[in-house]
Image 1 (tube, helix red, strand yellow):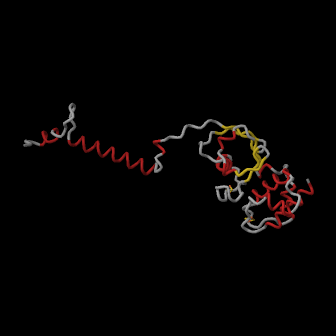
Image 2: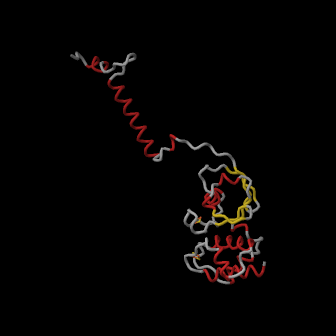
Image 3: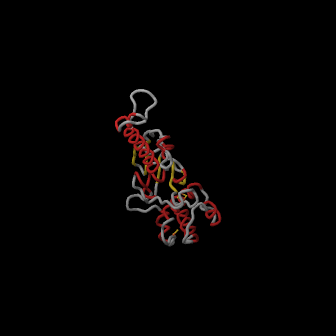
Length: 207
Ligand code: FES
Ligand code: FES
């Protein structure tokens, strides 16, 4: 039988010294519960239990300018360009390789920047739509897009132009059908395809 309150507070420990009082026990349980709740809210994926290793620095040359960055290892090349380097001319459409809006030239080859991780490209050279013109002089394909009215909303246009530049360099412009085939990864929801093909043909003639 418990004889007084002080004795009641010391009577719950059975694991040895020093014993917890009932008050200490309740406070300890509350602190653990609060910590668990904070973890659940702030880190729903449980990432705190599996921290990502600190990524190393990556050196990229973008439009002739060298950048040394240290992106999270999960950062796509597209997000690095847009969020870290503020080169927002490269567009994010689907973010899963289906639309071509994010097309850039990586070491001279066209690539969907949303499908590759930035940390994979240490030492690479990139060209984005911002690096295509020569000062005030537009690239011939940029000018051709204007001349042939090859855009409406313009959302796909930077990707179309970068892909077109790659297409011309690759020599896949022998016919309208060939251009359509090799540009088929670039979607234009405004349906400006005939004008886009005409622009690529014009730039091919001027190349
Ligand atoms: Fe990269 Fe659509 S945003 S393919
Ligand atoms: Fe609008 Fe191509 S111009 S999506």
